[in-house]
Amino acid sequence: MHEILTPQQMLAADGLAVKRGMSSLTLMENAGKAVTAEILQRYAKCPVAVLCGPGNNGGDGFVVARLLAAQKWPVRVFLIGERKALKGDAAKMAAKWKGAIGDFGDFEKSIGGSKGPRLIVDGIYGAGLNRDFPGLLADTIHGSCARVVSIDVPSGVDGLTGQQRNCSVIAELTVTFFRKKPAHVLQPGRRLCGELVVCDIGIADDIADELPIRIYENGKPHLPVVLEQFHKFNRGHAVIWSGSALSTGAARLAAMAAARSGAGLTSIAGPRDALMVHAAHVSSILLRPADTFDQYTELLQDKRISAFCIGPAAGIGEDTRKRVLRVLKIGMPVVLDADALTSFADDAEILFAAIKAKPGRAVVLTPHQGEFAKLFPNATGSKIEKAQAAAVLSGTTLIYKGSDTVIASRSGFAWVNTNAPAKLATAGSGDVLAGLVTGLIAQGMDEYGAACAAVWLHGDAATRISRRSIIAEDLIEALDT
Image (cartoon, rainbow, N blue to C red; front, side):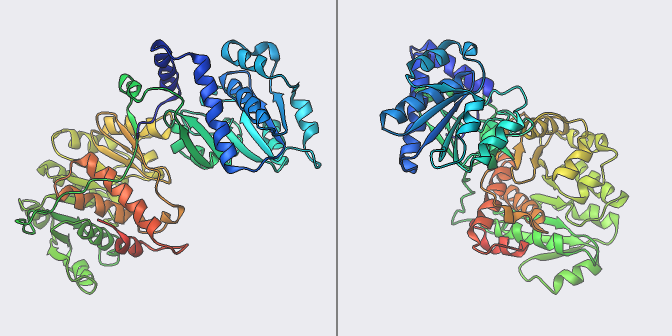
């Protein structure tokens, strides 16, 4: 299942399960069983410290402690907070634990030596954390050198944003329940979780259908089918606008990616001197000269063009602004990347108005963090919330790039990508992505599907390359389309 639930939606899912007859205490017992099963599967018997907080996450921790002790593991429990603060199911689970319950001071004293914990179960705070996490506690946990298993999310990580609340636990394994939360897919939360396991605790799958879910994890795409009777124009004509003669590489990368995506025909358009440079490098890519703005406008009248990309090394300034506004006025599907975005950094409203003037066509924006901040300086919240608001404001599909790329639709839905390795952070990588989106739209994919597919294929290509370091050209060769 690819739904991602906010902490509030997860709370609602628990409530709906209870309304259907599932006891909340049973849900907590099942959560503790799931965590225990994952521990028993991965770790040899060793001294364990279970750290319990005052809420339901702590209640889960008490279940884990009881079940591990039943398996003859040496377990000590430490309560971070006051015993009297325990309420409801958490208090009931604490009562079922028959061993001693230490406090933070006792935990500090237990660290080190041959009898110190070799495994720490972090049941301090869950995804609903709304306060800063104490640095002293984090330092003590990691100063122990014990391996850490977190329940739901590493304590200190905000479940909605994936950001640390002052600091956090760094887990080797995180066990969560029913569905992932934003903290599991957004950085740095995704990294702090370590290995992530989503476990079934008895909440029916169809409960997700009753929730107003607007966030999903991006998955492997279904690409356009190529029929036997197709000719090249049936498979789409993608056109990439080139920068000047000394800035041709980015457009060439985008064009090669568009062609590799499956577009039947890919062209690079631009000034003749720039095309002379391209001519020395490409064979299967067509070259379309357009030295003047009138020739550019005439080029855009070609009805066979099914998607147009402008931005990769196009140049920042008035010339690029004019070209962007002209292609938007004509109304063909457009991908705006890099310089096409930065050229509107001080006047984004003009860009958004031009996009919204023809609301029925596809427009995809592909900003990285710096470009996003210039176009949407007032965006607040998590990366997902920022992307959602920006897509609605601009009237586009928006790809907010990064190690946790978010794709957001103009209707406010979002998909978070999780398959991109760190080696994608290389010059030209974004140009390849822009070309992929263009090529997929050219083949008839809707803008949301094309954006999600391109981002997933981009990450998959990097994963396929065994080398530690890659260059953008490697991505094109590794694409599996």
